[in-house]
Structures are given as C-alpha cells and as structure tokens.
Length: 316
Length: 273
Image (cartoon, rainbow over all chains, first blue to last red; front, side):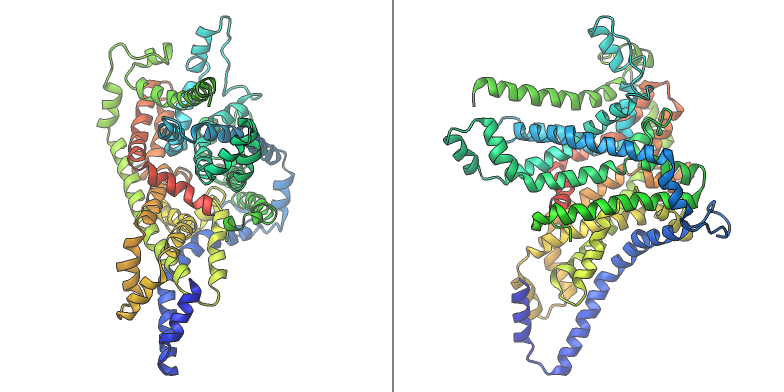
C-alpha cells in the first residue's frame, strides 16, 4: 500500500521544488495537528508518572511536604527483601500458574466443545462471556454472598451431603487463595473461551475433515491438528493471563482486602496499603516500579522468545 | 459424531452454563426476598416476591447520582478516546514520515502498562494537576490508558481502506482533514463501534482509579457505590444483592444488544496486539 502511495506522490510531484516543500510542510503540520493531542495526554498520564515514580521512589516521603529524605535505592531494596511483598508475589505467581494449568486448558476444552456445527453455539458463547462484562466489584459482592460461612453454597452442601460441615471459604487462610482463584476463573474464563473460538474459526474445516477421513480419532484430531494450529491464539491467551495475574486488585480487594492474615495479599493490594492507607508514598512508588519491572521484564522476554514466532501478532 | 459423544458434549457445556448463570440469577432473585429468606434458603425462589429492596434502591438519591456519574464519565471518556485514537491512528496508517515507527512503538508500550500497576504514579500526577476529587481526574487517565489499544484497533481498520480512495479525495482538492472526516471515518464505523463499546465497558466497570481519585461521596460512581453499600448493609444481603443487581443491569442489557461489537472490541486488540 505504501508503495502505491509513494508512486502516486511522485507522479503528482511535477510542481517545482518550492511548491513541493510547502506541501511537505503542510503535511508535517497535519501530522502534528492529528498526533499531538493524543501523544501529549498519553505522555503526561502514562509515561511521565513512571518517571516521577522512579524519582519519588528514592525518598522517604509521606506524600506531603518537601522531598528531603533521600534514601537512595533503599526503598527498592526493602521491597524486594520484605517477607510480605515476597508472599504477595508468591500469591500472584500461584494464581498465574493455576490459570495456566487449569483455567486456560479448561477454556480450550470448552471452546472446542462449543465450536463447529452445534446447536446453541451462539447461546453458549453469550453465556460464557457474560461475567466478563460485570464489574469485578459486583462479581466480588455476589461471590462474597455465595461463600458466606453460614449460608450460600454451604447451605446447599449441607442439604445435599449428609454430615457436611460448613467451610469458611473466605475465612480459612489455607484455602482462601484457591477459593479466590475459582471466582477469578468464573469471571475471566469466558474471555479466553471467546479468544479460542475466534482462533478455532480460523482453522480450515478441510484440515480436520481430512484427518478424520484418514481415520484419526477425535482426540488425535485435537492434539495433532487443532492444538498446533491454535498455537498463536494460545500464546496470546497465555500472555494476557500472565499480565492479568500479576496485577489482580479489584476483585480481591472487595472480597478479602488481602486477608485473612495476608493469605490473599497480592502485589497490588500490598502497594495500595502502603500508598493509600499508610501514606508511605516513597515506598509505594518503589513498589509500583518493582511490579512494573516484573511485568515489563516478562513482556519483553515473552515477546522476544515466544511471540516473535507469530510475526503477525508482534506487539509493535 | 456418535450420539454418546454429542450428549457428553452438551452435558459439559450445559453444566458450565449453569455454573455461570446461577450466581447471577441468585443475586437477582435474592433481591425479591427478605434477608431472612435469603439466609435460610439462598437458592430457592421467593414464595411471593418482595419489591421493597429494589424500590428502596431505586428511590434513593445515591443510586441515581452514582449511575449518573458513571454515565457521564463513561460518555466523556468514550468521546475523547474516539477523537484522539482515530486521529492518531489516521496518522499512523496513512502518513509516512521519519520516526513514525518509533512513535508507534512508543504508543504500543502502553499496552504493557496496565493502569492498576501505575495507579500511584498516576494519582500523584493527577494531584499535581489539581484534579483529585474531580471527574476529570478519572476521565483523563482512563482516556490515556485506553489510547494504545484503541489506536491499534483503529489503525488496522484504517489500513484496510484502499489507497485509491485517498488519492481520489486529494485529486478532487480535498484536504487531509476532509478525507479523514468525510470518507475514512464513515467507512470504519465497525471499528469505531468496537473501540467505543470496549471503552464504555472498561469505563463503566472501572473501580481502582475512582477509588483513589474520588474522595467525596457526591462524585462516586456505581462500582464505588456497590462497595460502600455492601459495607454499610453488610448483613442485609437481600438489599445488597438488589443494589448489585441494579448496578449490573445496564451492562448486561448493553451486552445483550451489542454482544458482537463488545466481543470484537475486547478481543480485537488482544488478537492483533
């Protein structure tokens, strides 16, 4: 396309040099006029804050008054060595691994089952995606009700299973993280199912039909034909799942506030508590940058070693 | 496919659909019960529906004020995202100049920086700008963080428009702006719709940014209202679930009407990006 534009411009570039220069200045002004407002806003509110945070992160600062107490990189060092931050990071990684090992495979299975010539296909897609349009706050409130110690799901289980003793789903530090993961899956699996459904649509029916004609069992078709062709979609889905897992906040904050006894603390709730409840802004800024560094580092490595295989899907 | 296979397939799909739908239905139905009934029989239908939980919420000023705040923030955010993202995407798709790819990469780096991670730094800048506790303190960061994915989606749509149309427009003496406004934008309506609904859903559900930016109750949006309400009436589940149901209703209705655009918007950016 760019080729044809260039040749079109050369043909029309008959006017003398002076004219052409004016034309180019005009083009540059147009470019600037169209681009500057968005670049300015984006730079001011996405990039500039990170640079400010890098600066604030080097101070012991409560957010008010002058920046006087320069502590160098101590804040960053303290974040990385704080047991609670490491615990929060472990929780993020646990959610991440559970997502990759349970949520995404389940999404692939459901997408395969819901694809192809099956009645009610559109209905299942609509239903599976529905939780994704609810706010995480509403999701958290509904599930807090269902997971109460003395009603909700416990009530049903007590009726169905004789001798069942109510489980404090959100109150037991040993299980609460896994319970939260179930809620996370409930809300996010539809997004991945829809991604996979789109990916499955891109697989030509001739390929799977041919495999079936050759006598391949349905499972062989899935493993030898469908999954390899679904590769690019899986790699994107994994990427989004990891980035999402590293920054959970809304749902967990409303359901547990990181408790009980920090059992569902994530990096984001940790950062929120230091920044907006204890007002240790300098330290909070350092935490923000550490989280950003972890996400950014992962994204670059993933881009370099995994996504680069799918050139069309490259980020930039 | 064998009949047994087909039945198994439906069983799995239906079980999953039930798991998805039951919590939402329970929330909506519980609003029609008394809290006593909700507690004793959380999954049963009410013998005779009680309307007071819903009517109390609908009669309260705070619900409508929060819904109004959410709506205004959503509409302004969406308009700004459409204006800024389409003009930037226009440049990235139809102009050639040195540094273009670098600028585009700079833009796409934003995809790696979700607002959750940057919330404190963004809050500090918002405070420097004097926008804490104002609608703009929510709108402008939302727009800024929504730009990368929107530019990406729209750029792909713009690049699919044939060059000949643009050449014809310039031959007829049109300016770039006229081409952009009169020819390009009307042709990419599906792209604009996808970006608009994506932005609307993100804005309507946004929680963390309003939580740190809006202090005064007067400015609160619905997600903040839901959290506050569930704290205030923590044991009165019928009332809390009625409020939560009313808060999610607009999003659900919107989704049922614009499902295709919403799914396209929410997935287009990630598939292409």
